[in-house]
Amino acid sequence: MNSSKQVKNMQAIRARKTVVIRLVSLITTCLICMHGVAQSNQTVTAEMVESWMSELSNWGRWGADDQLGALNLITPEKRIEAVKLVQAGISVSLSHDYILESAGRQNPPFDHVMSGINGQGAFVMDRISFSYHGILHSHLDSLCHMSHNGQMYNGFSKQEVNQEGCQKLAITDVKEGIMTRGILIDIPRLKGVDYLDPGTPIYVEDLEAWERQVGIRVQAGDVLFIRTGRWATPAGAGQGSAGLHASVAPWLKQRDIAMLGGDYANDVTPSGVDGIAVPIHQLTLVAMGVRLFDNMDLEALAEEAARQQRWEFLLTAAPLAIEGGTGSPMNPIATF
Image 1: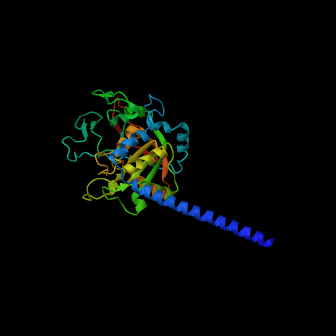
Image 2: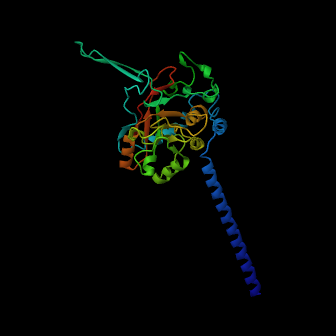
Image 3: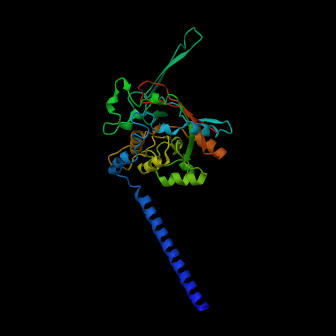
């Protein structure tokens, strides 16, 4: 009788061992497959980007007439939570000082003319004019800044843009300002360097490695600022610019970010996607309705965040209320 029980017990133990071995084998296989997928996803084609234009789309998510896009994710509750991040009362500008040099352009991107200098009156004045889009000035892209196949975000026709400006999706949609949690993702710090070499792509693996290192997870309604060390890069370091690889786009949608910012134009250049120069711009602005901060200066922010060992902060920003504007010069503020 005891012998029979022993046999049954041994059989049960073997069966459990067999199940465990099979589970371990299955898990190992899955991990290998996932690793392979992650590696293969670093290769993105124009066809994949075109497919993502619908798969990652927020069109219709907040209604057929919505023009706020992903700013809908910044709820009153999100703003209240963001205000609670202020502990030290220290604020940092994320704007680079505006540059007078033309950088090879025929017309200067920024023009500043003083008046009243030699007058007898008490006041002096100045006039400024901008061509702020491009790779020099800190600015915010409105959703009418880009279209794809004749359509802008939420299906609005490119014909809504004329000589009088953007009749839909203009920068005045952001007139009430931005207040939410900002997160700095400092990739040079992650890699132990002062700056990323021009043309260096940033992948999902990099973003998630940073999350693990600092103990923060990107959540819905957050604004991400990706530091590449652009303003710390010495002249003559190389061609192109470090930035996000196109393969990051599904991750951005999954995390439901409200806005995206970088110290260059957000996209890595060259993009690595044949036929598409700025896939991150296309997928965020047009498909997801995610506005972009371009050419931010994140050096002071990186220094203060490292000093405090805090990588999240209250972000506040407001554009110029330009009717029909495709964007605006910007000076966002991070407050710790």
